[in-house]
Image: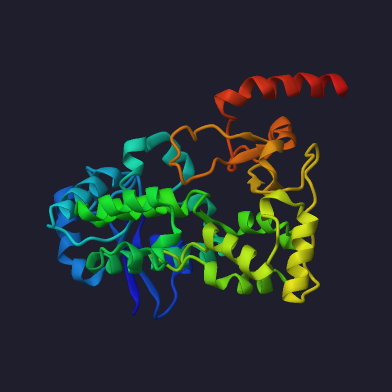
Length: 372
């Protein structure tokens, strides 16, 4: 089945098309651009008239920079349009589908308030779209549309997650079940799964964290794909799983205990020991131990430094700001001491350390400056 998105922008159609055609795959994903209408009622009517032929919407944030072919400027923005669509979806007066924000990052930071972010499933930064991003974003657009379609007819937790729920944290299952039982609109359930399960390390972990917990340096390990293949049963196969590669941590731990048959939990042994056990069990050679970041002392890795994107033991890191309201099944993200001192990757990886870490970081900076 080909997934179809409608893309609303203020650029001329041929210009808008050039921005999204790299995401398209014949027979799998089609994105049709249109210039905005003059009023939001005209725009809403147009979308509703075509809703039988679309599986998702892509909206620019600012729709009033350029006039349409009728020389009319839009009297609305992407957020107000998305808000009305979400309201009508909740009232069952509009087809339930994902809404994607497609805008330049500077506009996003300046114009989109926190309340507006809840309207969109994901955000795509126009300024960073390129060949490298197509292979990442295309599966996400397809997975989002397919996930919405699936959840419209399925409200069973185990079917949505495609996992034996006896293995999963009861607190997460309770939260998700309440959302389903209370008959919330699909976009509310979607955002909970995307933001609180897929988007946070904890119950699910991404590839970098998986490698860190196994002690492996991905870039220097030709047999990394063989390790992932061995862990295929622990991979997340629920809604949106085709767009975001994740692994169930409880199933990874079961694999370690039953297959590797290690006497010690992976958390309590060095990266070298973990890698040696994996090599012996899988009978592979080309996986290498991840080396410690400068100023780090432990190689009992459990997370990833957001400054260097490399394995890190949390004891050698500082908690990143903005994580005060984590759910019990979620784990905080860290930046290594060295990356914090050198302000590495602050633009995209992290911005500040948590309040409780500020005094310690200031002390480290004083010590660092004296030693230079």
